[in-house]
Image 1 (cartoon, rainbow, N blue to C red):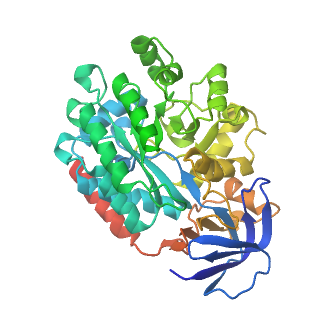
Image 2: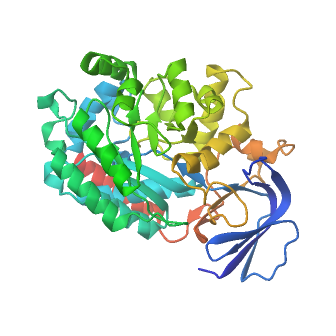
Image 3: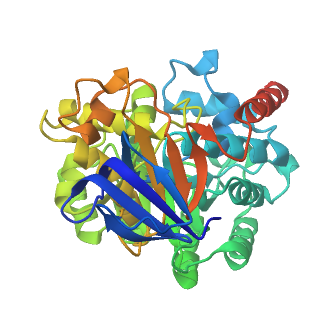
Length: 451
């Protein structure tokens, strides 16, 4: 790593600070892994000065919910037109065969695609532990993150309610509650780093109300608070889930989660489509987080989350691509574009300006993950940056607002540069340390074996 880097002459720098300030013809200085100066005409005494003319600088995108292992089962014809429950039942039968090697290569591939589209931090929800796969699948993900250099929030997912107990998953991909709790403790003790600029923070993430017993949900929340880590799960993604909770718990999904201690600023839910007005108010009052997954929700026909209402109520909202088999992409810039557009149908054409979509994808994600050291461009923040080249035909005629042009125009979603923790991992739209075609070949081979 260079001791100091100066990103010179950026066409625009979207700081995502408290005032959403945009700096034109600006510079960013990085010393080691920290942004130390943002301004115009900064001294060029850095070890490496990089001309960023025609480039838009953003805080690195923050992906708050993913399932890396699903990268191996993208675009399966049998589920291209399925709703969530049917989609899950079909895929579970395939995922039973996943191996540690498959978890590693799918994680590497997902993070490579995220980096190439400007994402610098990712939370992954791995909840599948087939009996034949061993117990250390999260370790494989962490190894992949360490190698590729992404800031990583792995969540120790779990399923304890298989088909024999009325759940959706086969019994051979669920675990006993004792086994889940013991491995959660192991992962936290071994990997969790709560320090500033941490590259790895563990959260605990039972899969969903229809695959986890009430006892495990409650015990996981108690453990997470003892260990001072965050909690995550799927919630209110479909009407089917709402019916399941009312039938089995005599409560709506959020009411059920509240009854077992699952609200607060250390909790975030994936999806959050079917909240009513009172529930939105409660989420705001408790500062509970939501990972908004627009592409996956569109792909599965699940619905559109009430994001504007959640933000207005004070809830923390971040953006997410969700699993690679329900989005079929790990394209973070595309996700920001879709978030901007779909809420114009959900809550009005003026309800989601480009700057708000960018804020959700950056600072909003940092807030959801409980971080104040990433998500904006300012002195003292981590040097996590994404730069996009708008000096092309794709953006011609849109330079009255070059930052918004990233979302309104363009057809190449690749970042020109992605920097994580002060290290350049993507440059001139290519991975610096990995051959993406070699990764693609390994993914295709692993996918063929699994299928």
